[in-house]
Length: 450
Image (tube, rainbow, N blue to C red; front, side, top):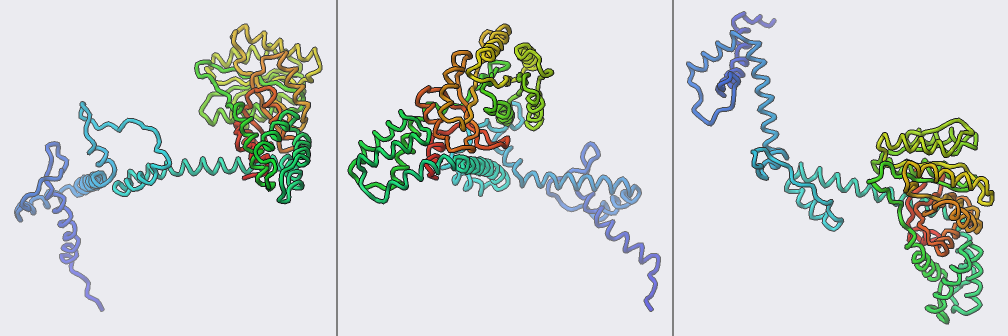
């Protein structure tokens, strides 16, 4: 049977750790304000002083313990600060006022500088690693997003690609390029809706460079892709939003079913992701479901929608939306309009009225006028552009539903004929399936090249 410890022995065991703890704390010395502070290296306190401090602490155990705990935490923070990035930041030098200032913002390092930055991070692990990791993750995210979009673009153009490439492939089995082959190639390009002018231009250049030489279908497709990119690059101009205008008014027009309403919502999503304040005006008051459709899309994009009941005056709604967008200092106002056939004069007159009315508030509005074209209409898109240009200030194009038919080549024909900027293309129904137009990516996708 174990022996029960005597009261004095238990007290000694409890007092021992307390005395050692309090002794270490008190040995740091007291500051002028009564808060213990670290003191410079000195001789340890004498035995008499240590015993006096212990007795004093024992008289106020709770206060002494709380003060010590606070002091220990502060000391730990100071140690971490000395070892961490804050210490190195302060070592860069103090400002005139004595407070350390961060270095001025600079441009993000170029890709070739990344390795040097990572090596530098080795010397400054906490600060350097965090900064470089953030930068690299941002670049990786952008690259992944771009690859995802290019993949969707190639998939969306698959029907048009198949129509063009199958014809080219069937004509070439490692043989010399002769006139008959050139004629057949020209027919294939015209059937793919690239248009007579574009087909003639591509064939003429190919014949000039490769006539009488052995060529493969891959070489022909690569040559066509380069020539198509050359045609498209002058019109691959993103829609520029003027920050001086509050708001920049964008009027969106097109025939019934071209995809105006969804295009507006997708553009709103793009601009909001850029940090802009966006507002939508549901100007298609003729179609019963149009207003509700735009409201749903507006909720998805997280932007407000100005609307009225079905049958209301579209020009009046556009005017009110511009007033409110001005009052709320919006960056962009996207105005939807009723779908109208390009051969119906009365509907086209209504569109001209919208332009006249909003110019009473802003003589330069609309600042941009986007004509939305359904790629599935093929060559009929030419007639739409010609008619809408006579009734409204069309200054840019958006092509939608490129994934819905084999007529994606019409974009090349439109670019060659009208020279209007193509600001965006759509290859799906998702809110992220509308992106700024990239000439080379489209050309290579159309020819089935990665």
